[in-house]
Image (tube, rainbow, N blue to C red; front, side, top):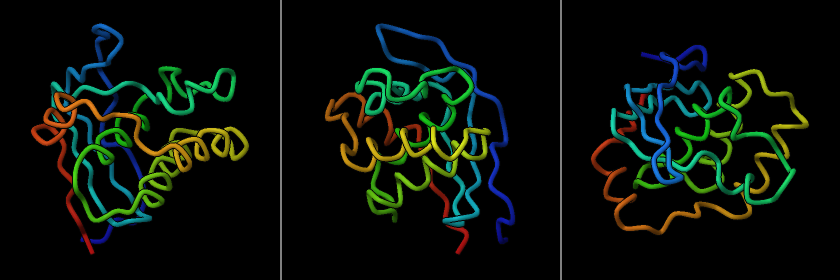
Length: 139
């Protein structure tokens, strides 16, 4: 099966617990750019775009509208998959585009991710991702 259009197959349902966000329902994203399906299962924990958010005023990615993109990016960054760091940042950019963010705002969100990479080194969050994140290749 070839993915012809990038899209989210579902909305996001989350709960904030001690500064982290917990998925309450499964979230699935299909990427045309990389021909992959990313599935984040219920109970996946993410931080809601911490890299661009740490640079105050740079972007409003932690807005609820764009949290699906942050969730997908955190998921792929915390597991071993066939994407480089640059590709993971481009996947994030693609997700933001699908969600309707303009080019200028996307650039402000993309470059901190590209330069800073994943901020998470917490072993508990990495173990959580290994249990709840799946990347399926369609190439």
